[in-house]
Amino acid sequence: MGLRLLPPSLINRIAAGEVLERPASAVKELVENSLDAGADKIDVILTDGGKESLIVIDNGKGMTPDELSLAVERHATSKLPTDDLFHLDFLGFRGEALPSVGSVARMTITSRPAGSESAWSLSVNGGEKGEPEPSSAGFGTRIEVRDMFYAVPARLKFLKSAATEISAVKDILDRLALAYPAVSFTLSDEKKKRLDYPACSDTLSRIAQVVGADFTDNAAPVTAERNGVSLSGYVSLPTLNKATAGDQYFFVNGRPVRDKVLLGAIKGAYRALLPSDRFPVLVLYVTLPPEDVDMNVHPTKAEVRFRNAQDVRGIIVAAVRQALTLTGCQTSHTLADEALSVAETAISFAPSPAPSRPKPLPYPKTTFSASKQPSFAQKQNLFRVNETYSAPTPRAFETVEEPAPAAEETADDFPPLGLAKAQLHETYIVAQTEDGIVIVDQHAAHERLTYEKMSRALNEGDAPAQYLLLPEIVEIGEAKAAALAECADELKKTGLLFEPFGDGTVLVRATPAILGEINAKTLMTDLADTLAENPQLTSLQERLKAVVARMACHGSVRAGRKLDVSEMNTLLRQMEAEPFAGQCIHGRPTYIELKLKDIERLFGRRD
Image (cartoon, rainbow, N blue to C red; front, side, top):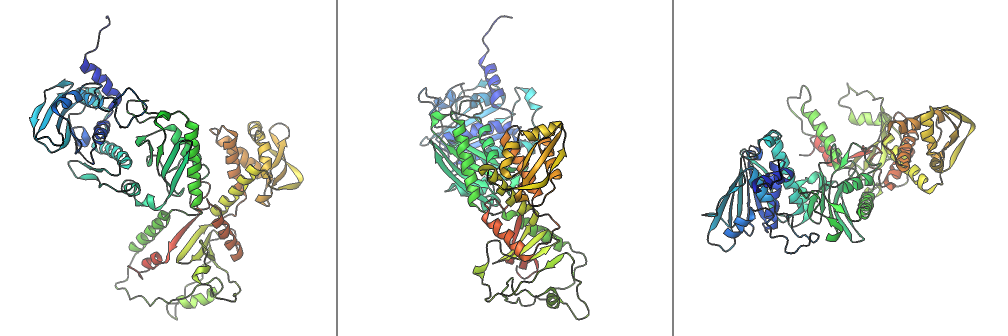
């Protein structure tokens, strides 16, 4: 078969294969056209998830009959006044959207420019273009797409259920809505309105609409500028995280993108704050000179290429880390809400409820203090229901009395994490704050503190070592011994001194003084296992972080260890001084806070 030129209809179908994967792809292209046309109100209507039909209605500037006819021609655009592909002020610029949609579906465009007395309509069916005809419509443009992919039946079998396709469309609109807070968006189908975002005067309000108040209540603001790169937005506290990266929204020069450089920067910023299989929630806007970023990488325009990727990565890592540091030891409010929800559910499903509920007793206005807490025997009298029944003393509840100070504490005396009152199950510290209580996981909290100390020692190289009276020989196998040997010089900075000693063995001379009394053999075996279990950690820095994390676990207060009040309060004060004390090195919370009003609600004292 000889060479031949392909007909325009076939060329458009081939191009559509790159641009249009599903109904959501068509919605993206059409809504971007609406935004480029200056619309501030966009409505999307789906039938069968967009497979049967999808309609996009906007109040943009509209098109004349001549423009309407030209708009469905391949590579016709009003968005490139010059040949400059770098200074792009519009979302679209290829001139492929409308001809691509029209080549695989039945498309009707109805448009009326501002000031025009009438509207005009044009249809394209499987690439066959009709002529503009008079019509009736309000100002703006209405595009209806029916029988998606009828002209390329092979593509139909790859479409998912209506619910899945609707979800994909919503994700597209969410991202565009975050990029354009001043524009109102709605999404409806044959069942109900799926999305309704009124126009907002500020970005944070739009973020609350799209991502949710749960995020904005538990997020840190990010702002930075360096080397011509500006960064703004919000990132979640480490304790508010997800199983996927689906709630990470990146924008480059106002365009929603998915980029490996940006994803890698976030991973670096949250390293040691989240486990590798958990992802923070974030909305970040990156702005840089147009000549420093290439938007023309892929037909979908979802990928970008930075001229100085390291500069972009560096500012994101530094700014996000700084934002998280400024939050102090704060943890997500969501955790307390979940705890209250569980408690309320347990109460609502409690068996054999009483037939009537007595009015609650007047709540005594008492000044609480660590020094004036009565002994447990005295507390039993306070909680006694009647003289014939007294609740047994719970074994796991440890109460410690302190000598009374000279003056009574006031609300101003309470530190942020409160004053320790008790230890539960030899695992959890209960502290009283000014307006509630804090419950601390003692091992998780101390593990974070130990990790940060050892990380600083690794960077500064001044951690004291605790020498063993007799060096200990530890057998760990040749491969593991070799892996540890690669880290030996750096680990000296933490106070861990060891050296190779024959086949598959190491000789341990000292352990980090930070860890206190520790079994050297167990420590070295666990460190070797850590490296063996994480072969993906290729850089020395990553391996050192993993080793330090395992050492921190060894050197932390364990669950099951009794602490006195001074030890508990010391731990609380150290947490307040450590920026990342709100979560352990695995991303789990180290404490939750319950407000007094919420506790009163659980007991029916407050509506």
